[in-house]
Image (cartoon, rainbow, N blue to C red; front, side, top):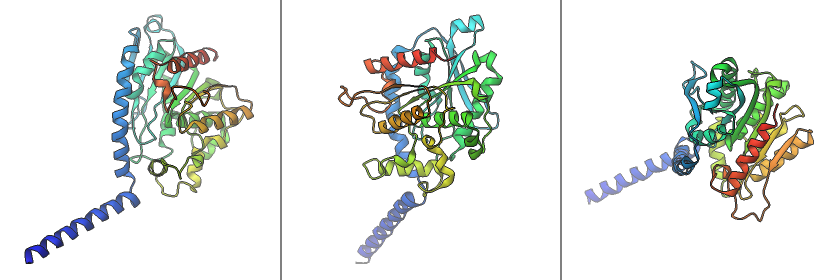
Length: 334
């Protein structure tokens, strides 16, 4: 009988500890849930990267793991450019690409293959690392990308960068960060509100390329099946559970702050992307401000349906169209 009571007591303590752990995980820190998200993203990224390998050209040179901020442990970037530019000491329109990952996952390596594919079309393409959440919070990534631009401008000749022709680009959360950095360079009052001094002048930012991004975080579907996901990553990124009402985090919703000085923009999303309304509304907001917008959107009945980050599937017609349209847009920027 005593043994039975001991077993019951031990089980009760174990159940209590598990309940406490679950409570802490849900209410005290987003980190346990973020670890699960990262695990899922890792599996998807490996598959996507492998699919791109056959399309990577062999005429690309690179400068890898360049440190853009000596005081920042995540302050690294990779630079890709055609070998012909290396031989001719030529500077090219420079696409600074910020990777996605819901602000909680990823690094510059995940878009290396795509960056090489794009560089083959006669551009310098830079993939930037930034700190992820919840280890670091908003607006650290915005500050880091701004610092990366400053470094690239100062080391332009060595890296085959044209310091007068920068384009900010990104996918998913990276598109959100790219749009923010573009806006702080374009709108002095927005830069002041964020407490960030732009690293390059507005005239040297000639465009933006935005795929499958988020531009008004208050309009995410918190009541839908992805509600818990969005609450977790925004809690992690903002550092606050009350990110809904936190005024310091409101600047992350760049749709509300864009003006006519926002750079010319190429914007696209898949017809089956849950975030598609964000791109549609941001494009409308920019056009309302008379910003030049080149959009690649698909009819609702598009088949096969194009999901989030469809552009990385370069073995599909839609992926090839996105790559071709992006390059055509970039070629018009002066």
